[in-house]
Amino acid sequence: MTGNLSQKEIKDYVDENVVQKLLNRQLAAVNILELTNNGGMDTLVEFVKEAVRVSWDGKNLPGIKELDTMTKNIIIPSRSGSDIVNTLKQVRSYKII
Image (cartoon, rainbow, N blue to C red; front, top):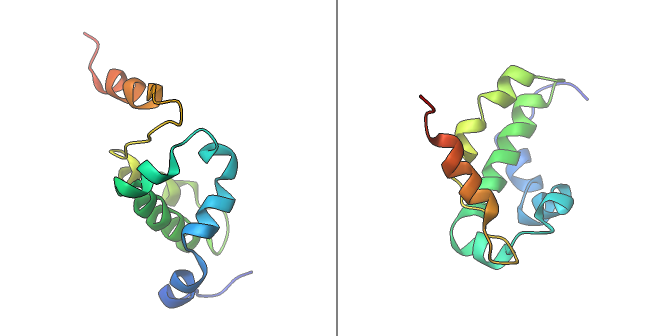
């Protein structure tokens, strides 16, 4: 599909249910209730909305990469409670000299 997609159309289509279906595999190990409570799900919904907007007319890798800042500080709580992903993100943010 091509053509302009309005913000209203994106807002009407992309909601938490769509994001959960789209990211089903990735979210399988995530504590969804905690993710919702810490605002992470709202961030993911906004990220997917922007990704749809940016990619609507075709593949736009540079545009998608610009969206990284939206999810950079998101806390991903695991179902197991180990939160390995968040630990890795902290380690990755340190500079190695």
